[in-house]
Amino acid sequence: MLDRQARIEQVLHALLPSADVAPKRLHAGMRYAVLEGGKRVRPLLAYGAGQLAGANEERVDRVAAAVEMIHAYSLVHDDMPPMDNDVLRRGKPTVHVEFDEATALLVGDGLQSLAFQVMAEVAVADDPKRQVGMIDMLARACGSRGMAGGQAIDLEALGKAMSVPELEFMHIHKTGALIRASVALGARCGSALSDSQLGALDHFSKFIGLAFQVVDDVLDADSSTATLGKTAGKDALNNKPTYVSALGLERARALAAELRDDAIAALDALPRGGGRLRELADFIVLRKF
Amino acid sequence: MLDRQARIEQVLHALLPSADVAPKRLHAGMRYAVLEGGKRVRPLLAYGAGQLAGANEERVDRVAAAVEMIHAYSLVHDDMPPMDNDVLRRGKPTVHVEFDEATALLVGDGLQSLAFQVMAEVAVADDPKRQVGMIDMLARACGSRGMAGGQAIDLEALGKAMSVPELEFMHIHKTGALIRASVALGARCGSALSDSQLGALDHFSKFIGLAFQVVDDVLDADSSTATLGKTAGKDALNNKPTYVSALGLERARALAAELRDDAIAALDALPRGGGRLRELADFIVLRKF
Image (tube, rainbow over all chains, first blue to last red):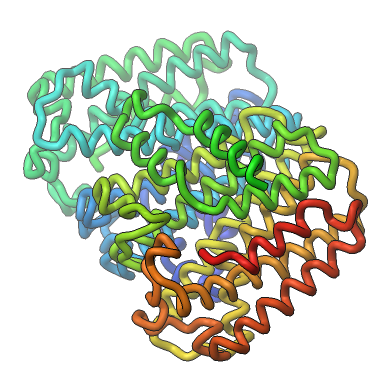
């Protein structure tokens, strides 16, 4: 896992425009937002799925970088004053604090475009038609009926109580869609998996996406800002509906463990019992930040 | 031209998610930002180029809608308080005024994703490999070395004097890149043009993109807010370097006419003397808003 985290860092470093290229401040901001930070969960999922599908790893690099750029852009915009108004992310000042709000806006915009460029400028699948389908998949995952839509639902939910099914609906969009796409896109860089295996992989990613969010809610309620590298206790402060507010800390923890078991069970249908994705499921659920 | 403006309105109407689909406020904002407004210059250029290339018009619909969505997203973000802080656009309150800033941020984000989805979810070229190349082209045109980069250069330029070559560099990015892509993408929906004809078309689009911007500067200095449907006189107020501030009104007008002549001359190498693009060049230069 550590080797893949080091690998994606190198890949992102190479794919992001140099801060010496004009417009320099924008490019510096894009690099600041993406590099040196983050657990790289989405790239790790893409690499894990790609390995199962027998994918050329240089193709998976592209997909892994694209999903991480989309994730980073969403954090930059989400941290801005009209949204969460947060000052700390990945242990560093947020982009609008370190640079300025206008730059943060453009950094997010530029990262989204770059993600699609990274998916389109070289072959990432055996068949260009499949590549077009993968780009469609990424666009849907991050659009208004995916990640951006989840952010909008989140905004509307502030200060309201939400039932567990309502929370699930929000998170399936907000974090689930991109996590699911990370797995699906990694797998589509190769050709070794059958349709039913791709289906099992999709089940895995749905469970693990939800587990990821439940753990996020638990950590926000139960950790320090220093450990998290972002402001802790923010959800309760903002009166944000979470799995902890809906279920309490203990039942939320139990739900995360349950979702992890469901995710692992889905991997049984896959070669080598899901390979690295098995260990990733534990990484996601047992993480401390 | 009017028939194509009506056509793109229908196409955009159909491709934008319904405001009845959750998240409703986000989808209402996306429709508000795109529909019923705008001259549709980029779609018109795509249709004009597509016609010369013998393209199936339903494919050009996709390209035309995608470039207009990208343009609309850039206006929404550009109008927000950290950038131009403008309250009027296309004769209506800007998105962050009509809705709120958080929604405006997500409306722009969602429109950018949707543009790529629209380019990827069906075939827009004879060959999927070419389609992947077209998506790459769009991503580059709107990214940090294209339109978003131009916005960043614009930000840095506020309050500074700029020479004509510096202005040109800014506008080649800020408006030129997407206008150029609109023409190039429209042409690539068909297969009737030779490489040298595609080159001539590219010359046309570079000249017309610059002409468009010069005329924009002239209109901002020389028209009323009521005519423009957006705040007039804003450039001088913001101490923004423009062709009018660099050259004066008369010489800026002469430059626009010159660029229009260069654009028209580039069309001579094309079938039917460039067809509708000829009349579009006049529309762009002689427009009053």
